[in-house]
Image 1 (tube, helix red, strand yellow):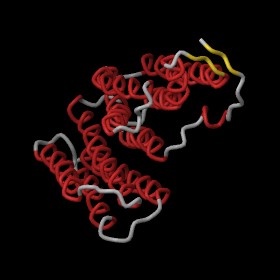
Image 2 (tube, helix red, strand yellow):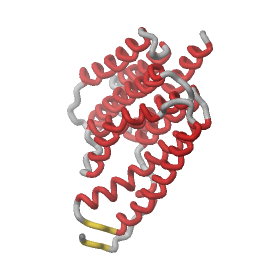
Image 3 (cartoon, helix red, strand yellow):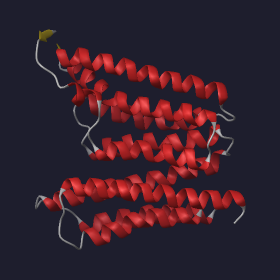
Image 4 (cartoon, one colour):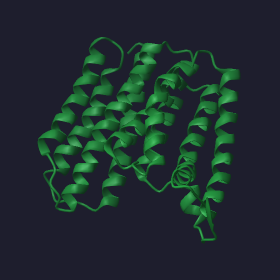
Length: 267
């Protein structure tokens, strides 16, 4: 493999820059800590954060390997990948030693989504719709793992994951449409609205059978409301779109946690 001494920006390797990635990682962590706080929850949170941080350097290393080259950025990426992986492993070990339930079940279910996202990273296709959806859904498993580790039954724990997955799908499709609209590219308004309605409807069905709190339906519906408002007003900058979605994501977490805690207390 060819070696080159090229300057690298360490920050660009060490820290993800996408607002969406931070949101899709921190939202399930925050929701899990709000509804099922435990010692194991902190270990799982550390593991999830370590995995998220490792994704960028792992992508750099895997991309260079696929292209049969080894650069200075490859070496730096490998160092950060190992450090972040160590954090993830330490968190997982702590979770295994303190959990009250089989938290690894959601992790196993999420594995195919994670592998699809990693494969897309290695081939520089992480911006593809399937890759974005897979990565966000995989990270959403964190909330289910935290809930199960705290003693929750599998059904309501997976219900929390369902809420975040519905929010992620609705948000990703909306943001992609907003960005295309911003740059005067064609997009399907009906498709975006259909996804919003399907996401909310799916969570409503889960609420009807008692898997998720009804406030979770309202939380996902909030994404649809933002879609209607944003697509019927003037386009805004991509940075504004990103920060808006982070705010919406936080609202989804807080509303869902309120609904879950009210359900737990019997209200």
